[in-house]
Length: 306
Image 1: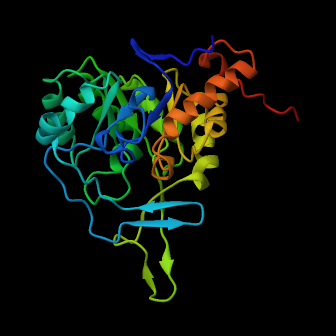
Image 2: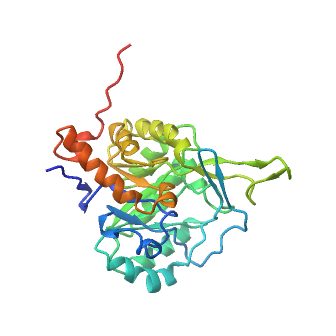
């Protein structure tokens, strides 16, 4: 049997292929298009303490090999989430990880405390790395001491998984990951989007309202792989790899460089079934390599001898 099950701490996931926050809504949007039960986990759209409209349009622009976005953490707010979104998510039988965002540490704590009152959530992904909001945003994952303090604050109020999501827009992401580990994180997600921009040469205006936004898609995969590899050599907790994964072959690369699980992001906009298709491809790949489980693939990268 080619087993795709993984564990992060004491939580078992049926496959190591999750859908990334901000690319799959709250699950309901794709329910008629994909077998949601075939996903390893659903990571929700970011949830803050209050509803948020996000940034004004234009806030999406497709580039040659990726997607530039400046959504600005648009969300329904935590109270509406638990009332209108969580009941559906709980009915799926799929592990649910809620992505939490805030403008201050107090807001992260506020959201987590409210979510702690409700069942059906296995963990929190802490959005410490959004590049397209004016308040908070990147500060939480650009300064090691802030990352550690914020992670510890959430760790102290929950027994659920705590998973900081880190930015690549730093000199050494491994230093930030070590701080998250020291703060009690169960895993880290990386990478979030790179900062990027695009310009309309006819109007001489930026393509998105905020000028600079988050860049995702296949073009960032080499950067993401390098950051996961760097971090895998620095921490002991699992890494959930993200960045440019469009098919199962891309996912295999992430496992080889040290990821325990992966998230599918931009590919969901192309095909909402991408997470399920990638998992099926991984199972076939394990069989072709005579590997019994996905864990045997993690970190198998062979370094070229010089």
